[in-house]
Length: 391
Image: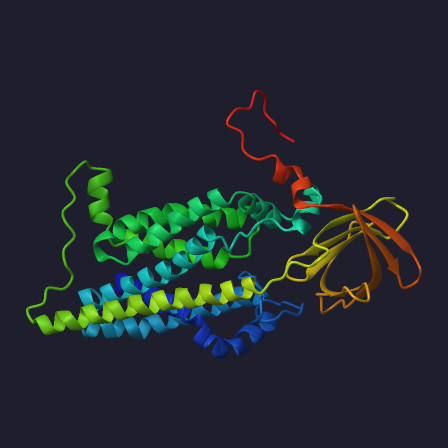
C-alpha cells in the first residue's frame, strides 16, 4: 500500500462522507455528542440544527468524525485497490472526479442562479436600512454590500453559473475549474474575513476545484509555465462496443437531468414561498417624533407580515405581525422562541405617520419614512462626480 494509493482512498471516502453526509448524519450523532464532552471538554449545550449556520459546533465535530473515519476506512480501501489494481485505473479516477464535478456544479448553479434572479441577496429590507451602520455585524455589512447592487450580485452569479456549466462537459472541465477556483477563493476569503458561517462548506468546494485542477496539472504546467504546447486531453474511455458507449452516455444524461430537476425544484419552492409574501398596509419605517420620551425608537413593518421594533436602548426585536384593520389593532409576537414577547397597540393612521396607543395608555406619535427617503436608496448612479460623495 503506497502513500499515494492511501491518500487517493482517503480523499474518495472523505468527499463521499461530505457530499452524502446528510444520509449518514444520524449515525455520527452519538459520536458527536460523546466527543464534545469526553474529548473536547465542551460544556455548553448545542444542537444539530444550525438554524442556517454551517459552522456550528455540531458541524465542526461532525467534520472531525468524518475525517477520522475516512482515515481508518482508507486503509482497507487502499489495500483492495492495490490488490485488484484499481487505484490508477481510469474508471475509479473518472468516477471520483465526476463526483466532484457534479457536487461543485450543483452548488455553484444554486448559488449562481440565486444571485442572478436575485434570491440569495434580495432588495434591502427596511430593518437593514434603519439599522445604525456601526450596529451591523460583519456578515450584515457584507450582505448589505451585495444586496445594494443587484447588477454586481448577478455578475458574480454569472461567474459561478458559467464555471458550473463548464464542469458538466468533460472537454471544458479544466476551464470551469480555473474559473471556479478564482470565484470560490473570493467566497472563502469573504466567509473568513466577514465571519459568514459557510466556512466549512466553501472550503470543501475550493478543495474540490483544486483537486480537479490537480488532475490536469501536467497540461496546465506546460501551458502556463514552460511555454510548451499542451497536449489534447485524452479520452478516458474508448469504446469498441457502441452499446457500452450508449449506456455511459445515458447514465451521464440521467445525472445531468437529476441535477437540473433538483435545481428547478429548489428554486420553485423558494419562488412559491416568496410570491405568497404580502405587503402590509402599514409598510414602512416609523420613527418617534419625540425621542428619549418613550422606550420605543422605531417601528418597522416589512413585506410578508413581519417587522421589528428598535427600542430607545438600541435593542432590536423581530416580530411576526398581526394587523386588524377593522379594530385598528396591531399585535407583534416575537420570533425568538427562547425570549417570547408580545407588544399590542391600537393605531390611527395620519397623513405622515401613525399614532399608537399602548395597553397602559401611553400615546406614541410616529413619522413615516419610506425606502426612497434613505440616502443609500435615493443616491443612485452617477456617471459624473465632480467630488467624491463619500458619506
